[in-house]
Image (cartoon, rainbow, N blue to C red; front, side):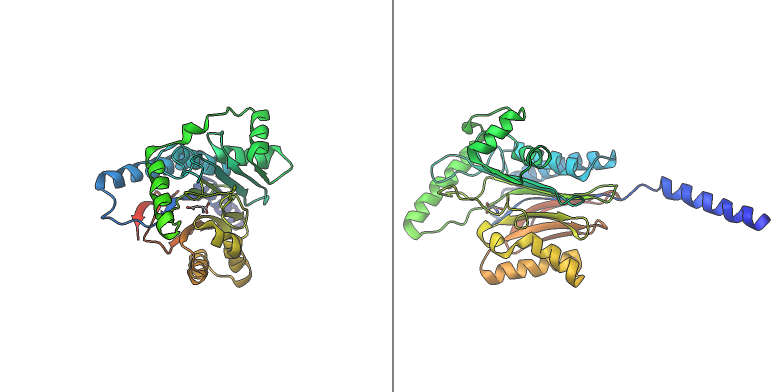
Length: 324
Ligand code: ASP
């Protein structure tokens, strides 16, 4: 009898302990990869970028630590970067060849494999929120241009003028690129924002938001709103958000390929991201990827000289960096 009481007691104590142990969560973000060096970026500029990255991490952390969902964390974190003029997403996005701004974004829910995306957005302040609304309130995955705007208005989004997104820095980039293009035919400017989160319920969500590439023409759409290219999430494996030369990411089926490597070859998240970046390099593309798996293990891989990036975990561990 005594023995049974002791076993019962032990079971009770251990289940109480498990209930009290805070569940693990993690969040990783990027603010674009590209050619950047400590020399070309003043300490003041570096501090400005790191301040926004830290603010975005803090916002995501407060959602997750309060028991919020990974999808809420991804949306709120990305909105901080969309509202900052420093990143190529939302306010501060790059200019098209025609001197306007066209935004792309997507989200994916790793639990349901639900996804939503928008492309060629000219008048909605936070495309990431619209992408999530497409996932939750429409029967579709990807809406583009004026149709996406019409859907946004029907869903109660306020329109902003295209000039809301303009910044002098991006206009200058377009002008410099047009000049270079006239001289040599190149287009090498990119930068985007993204976030992947694991919540306390074990669910993973990923999202990406971008202005695309400076000087883009003909309604060009990159990888960021393409599920399986720029964004992918699956609770079985992990979640991923990409930044880089979109045409290469689309052709590689980049983020879905990482997930497949993890699922079929049982490769860990970091090795799978490294292997995919290697494929990108072989193909001649540049950029980076962030990812996390169901255990909260983080990957941040890129083949450029820098990538704005950071992560935060329920353990209190926090990291931000710009250069390699
Ligand atoms: N991947 C984005 C695109 O190709 C740009 C970037 O990440 O810098 O549209």
